[in-house]
Amino acid sequence: MKIERLDPGSYLSAAVIAGDIVYVAGITADDLTLDVKGQTKQVLDKIDALLARAGTDKRKLLTANIWLKHIDQWAEMNEIWSAWVVPGQVPARATVEANMARPGLLVEIMVQAAR
Image (cartoon, rainbow, N blue to C red; front, side, top):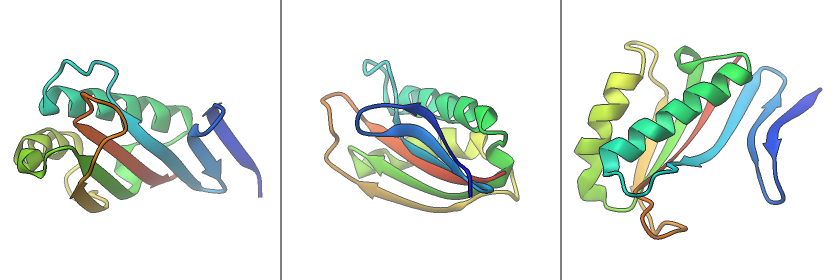
């Protein structure tokens, strides 16, 4: 099986394509001054771009893991998420509260998709 890595770095790749599955790393916002809605939108835009580079899109999402700095912001994050996903094509998903890797990070999202 051919394995392709998008934007490999010293400790992670932005995405890994193995066969017909695309594994997108945990994606975070670049602008940490944004609120949770703004960060979620920025993350989802970055995921759209990575999925496109991998030859797929959000209609083929399989799973999603979402980490929130504050679980009480679930509804705000979910408002942006729900507007982004394709109705009837939503992935299996988990959302949890977590300590984030950097100050200012409010959300991190990791997805897997079919090609």
